[in-house]
Image (cartoon, rainbow, N blue to C red; front, side, top):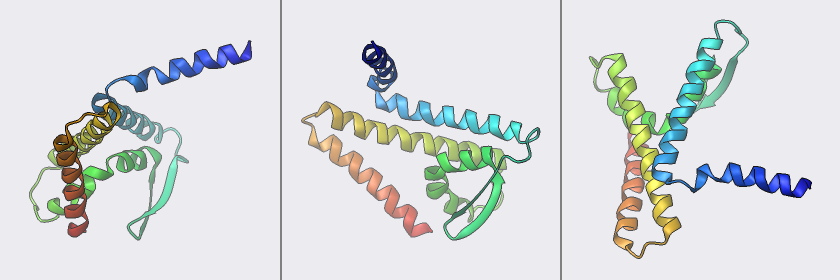
Amino acid sequence: MLKKKLSIIFARLKKPFKKDPRKLLPGIYFIFLFAAFVLTLLFAAFPSLITCSSIFGTEFCVPTGIYLGLFVSLPGYIILGNIFTRISKLPTLLSFLLIIGVSALFYYFCGLFLDSYRKGNSEKRIKLIIILLLVSLSFVSLLLL
C-alpha cells in the first residue's frame, strides 16, 4: 500500500522532468527569480532573512532573496559583469535585464546540451558546437575575472 502511494508520488514528481530541458531549465530559473523577489519583499517584514557568504574572496551579507537571485543569475554576472565595469553610463534596469537574459540563455544552452545527450542524436556536429560554445563562454568569462 505504501509502496504504491510512493510510486504514484514519484511518478508525479518525474512528470515535469520528462519535458523538454531546453524549456524546463530556463523555466526553473525564472521560478527561482520569482521566489527571490518574494523573499526580498518578505525581508521588510522579517529582517532576520539575511544570508552571509563569500564569493570570489569577498564576504558580504544580503537579504536571502537577493542572495538567491544573485546565485541563480551567476552565469550572467560572470559573462557580462566584467564587460559592464568598462561601460560606465549603462542604465541599471538595462543591465539587470541583460544579465537575466544572458543567464536564461545559458540555461537554455545547458538544456539543449542535456536534451541532445538524452536523445542520443547521431548529429555529433551539433553536440560539438554546443560544447565548444559553453567551453568558450566559460573560458572567456574566466579570463575577464
